[in-house]
Length: 273
Image 1 (spheres, helix red, strand yellow):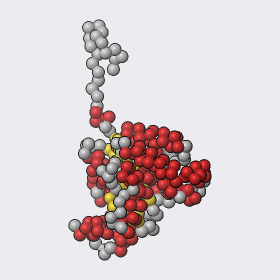
Image 2 (spheres, helix red, strand yellow; image 1 turned 90 degrees about the vertical axis):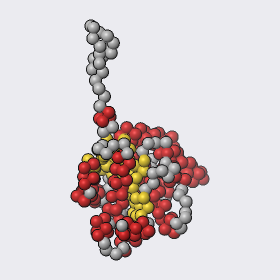
Image 3 (cartoon, one colour; image 1 turned 135 degrees about the horizontal axis):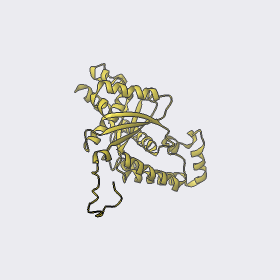
Image 4 (cartoon, one colour; image 1 turned 180 degrees about the horizontal axis):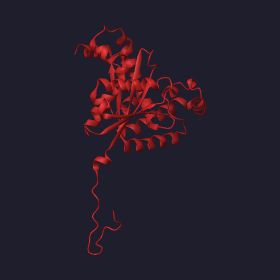
């Protein structure tokens, strides 16, 4: 396009048309698990989906929040139990904050909750009562979903596509999963299995990538929602009326975008229908 947009030599500079389809071209799902996928009684596979531009903007806000608190990358199992962090980084934070550790930790988590509450990335995914799923009678539904991890991953992808479809049913979607050497191949095989079984996944999910959550703030966000979703399901299995935590409410945009909780009741209903 010409630099000047004023009359020049009797002609007008006409801007080239903007391709809004190109501007809206790509959405990303950032996903992570909580619990030992193959062994746990409760498995969680959750994350956030958003437009590329919003993923980048929210990642900057997340990093700014980390900077303000002067903390290492956010891994919820270490935030809640610093002694489990083999790097010693979160234990150093706990020691540095001393007697104020719990109060400051809770205030810090509220800060990250505010980042997600004010963002336009939305939570997706599921937590599954894996122990109950494995004990269910064999059925065509159960065979199709294979195992609890497959069910959680399937729910995450379909939930994400449902949300993107409200903007456009043709936009390409990529998924970035936390780089876990133990399960990386499993994630790839899960996606390939879903592509074979579900044409919608085959046509819309354009790529799967593995990233280091230390370098990708959105994977730290995924870790947070996976942890909180799993914790909520664990609590509800003991008391169905237990309320969600304040952090869960914030990071699900005041419960507007909640991961699905596959309790025994929902599993039975799905198998029957």
